[in-house]
Image (cartoon, rainbow, N blue to C red; front, top):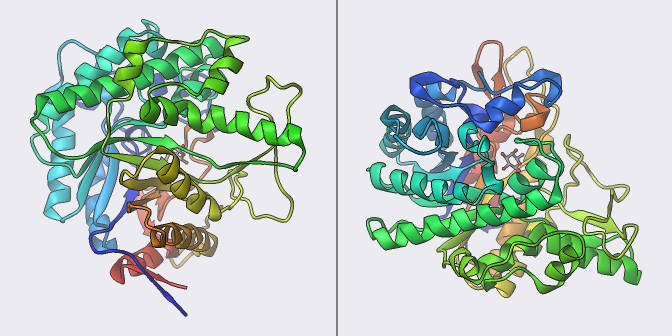
Length: 449
Ligand code: FCB
């Protein structure tokens, strides 16, 4: 048996997001979000489920923070709900909305758990969607104003600020594939939304720096996925480059190199309008202090119908393990991403801001949940993160997705990602075996493998 020790001060956390766990969709003056609207529209989610109740974290947060403390977590990543604070997107702020996060942060401090606050995890105020949402450039400015308000008025320290969670998902699943809010199906709109999301991010970082009020690190969380060709054929190799351009470089390049990747601009321009502005490029590339990486799996692609296909045909290699989402368990991917980002985009601190797996967990009569596959998954990915760190990659923390089972977007409550099992009928929480395993990992600051 060998010990894989992590450095002192390493962040051991778990993550959630507002719409997925809070419930209380109109408490204390909260406005409607695009996810409230989308999930309440028939046909959009599994079984017609929505986040009205979720884990009732809005009501039960004290209890939940207590559980985090019992597990020994030293960090908690949550997201702030924009429509709680600006029910109409902009205009007058709703103090009571902010109070919830102030109380949450205070409770975390009381337990010595470092708060990591994400400002946008997909719940845009519906009032802004009614004016075009992220496809409208004004939304970037509204985001900036909302962010400025939170920076200024959340008067307790957080450990890290994250502007956006996974802008790729917001833009493309929301505006091109229509499987996420706001449920649109237009690639031009999606490209515009992606651009305005990035612009909103850059504006918020700039505002944060210029105000000079806070010195906590600020960054962004991107969903990054290693892409591999299904064969050595030149068509598959070229496809993998395009798919990687779409999935990964379309966001990494503007943030770190101040321009969209050339090959992808050229490709997209053949059929779509690619947003372009030198001024915006400079804002989007406003330097950040760290990058958050959300990773679950890899993509293996076969060449699509033409050299213009930027998605390709994903294939599932046989004899691999897949989670309940149908995602391949591919721990090496986290090593590949960490080393690649470090070498290609600069030596800034990195965090794994999400990693985890859904499996069909069963609550036994004795109140236990034997989720050994989740333990194996997490152990495999953490060991590969550790390997990257042995090569000098500055990884500073790791967040399991998720602290507890929750509303998994269009899949409703059918996918369980939590370390903690939720009985949605009673709101009882039960520790899965993986939660106890994680507590031990944190206790010895490393793995025994
Ligand atoms: C990520 C999301 C998170 C959750 C996990 C499974 O893409 O950021 O909210 O849905 O996937």
